[in-house]
Length: 189
Image 1 (cartoon, rainbow, N blue to C red):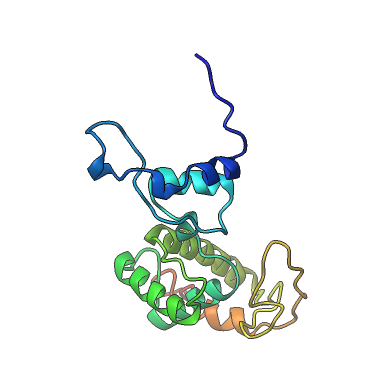
Image 2 (cartoon, rainbow, N blue to C red):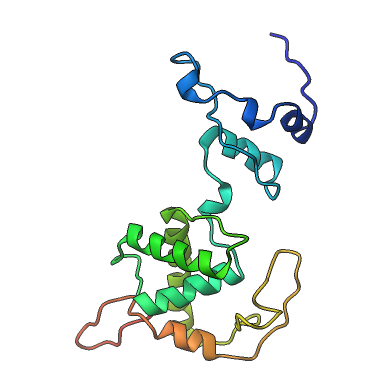
């Protein structure tokens, strides 16, 4: 079998834009053509572009990123008392997407329920650890309005924070483990 050298992924996609890919409704049955998904977002890596082309799902829909999205998620966890074992994922996802779109209209990507599930599970583990150790200190600035904490990225260096208010509030906002008669319930936001 002979393979043609297609060059780099960006050059391949510039030569074969998604608008030239026929939609499944116009393709003969069983040919497995990629659906027309419109213009590809420039913020995706080549691997993410391939994923989006083959699934029709924006990879950013599968995670809640640190920064504004994460603080929005944490605020909604506290407000709506979200817990992994007792949550309507569809309703929570709709609520998060509406709030996130209001706060970030230009960078908004609707999230999949999987993104909320993974993030809430990670937050609950963090909260249990913090409650067990009594450590409510933020590793980095936990103020969503602080320039050092609200836009954390992998290339941003944050300033270590001595504040405990954020985690103290969020660790006591929602019960993670239901009350037992003799023990105090662990809580999460």
